Amino acid sequence: MTLFSHPFKLSCAVALALPALLAGCSSTPQPTSFAPLRYTYLGQINLNASRLEILDNSTTNPVEGDIGPRAPTPPAQALRDMAQDRLAAASSNGSTAQFVIDRASILHETGGTLNGQMDVHLDILNPGGTQAAHAEAHVTRMLRPDPAQGDVDSQANLYDLTRDMMQNMNVELEYQIRSSLRTWLVDAGGTPVGSAIQTQQLGGSAATNSTTNPANAPVTVETPKVDVPAITTPTVTVGGTPSTTAKAVTNSEPDAVFPAGEGDDTPASTPKVMSPKAGYLKLPGSSKTQ
Image 1 (cartoon, rainbow, N blue to C red):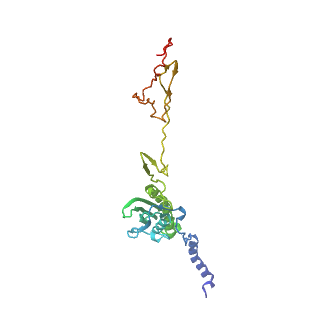
Image 2: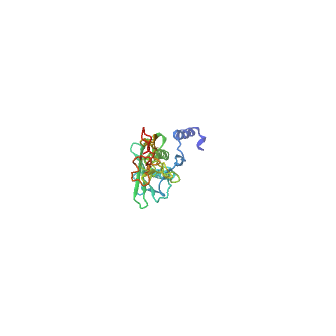
């Protein structure tokens, strides 16, 4: 006789299987695929450096109890992808931009809490390898999943926590770069942006700002013209006829003076008094010529 040929045995089988069926219906299905965590849509930050290096110290200095590597996208991998998507070396000055992952971990704390932490820093190194500039960013975030939704450290919960931490990290890192490394920011062509350094070039006795006079053209200074009142010689009556000599002097002829007579030692600046020749002077009231 088969199992299902007896009504009583059939009822018992159904009763035994019912709890398992109900448990399967009440549990929330976990996602089996997760979208990659990439950040090209946020735009690139161009640095005044010739190359970009990405170092992961979290692999050489692991955190005890870290379950981050079990996430669909481990936190350290998400940080590496972020650096590749958002940072670029856009110069040829021989410097190096070094992005370092110091910590990228998720811990399962007592009480069913997930505790995530990310620490990174970005150094600009001179061609000789010395540090020229530095910026760092830190993010911590906690997640308390609903136990009814499955295991606390499920892949879905680890993915959600990593995604949330990366959203905060993108904002924090960009803020720190623009605050601490603003003089190392360039556009895609390598031209400095933001706080550009302005230079001045000296020419003669005056300085010309290259930002306002790019061609460094010579500066011409014009002296205003000032008119000098005319100087008039004293009036002398000769033979009953007034004689007046006047000459106007302006700054166009600054050295003009009254000319002296030929063979006369009278200074050029002294007014001349001309006398008539002998025999032509007539005295008033007389008809004789002296």
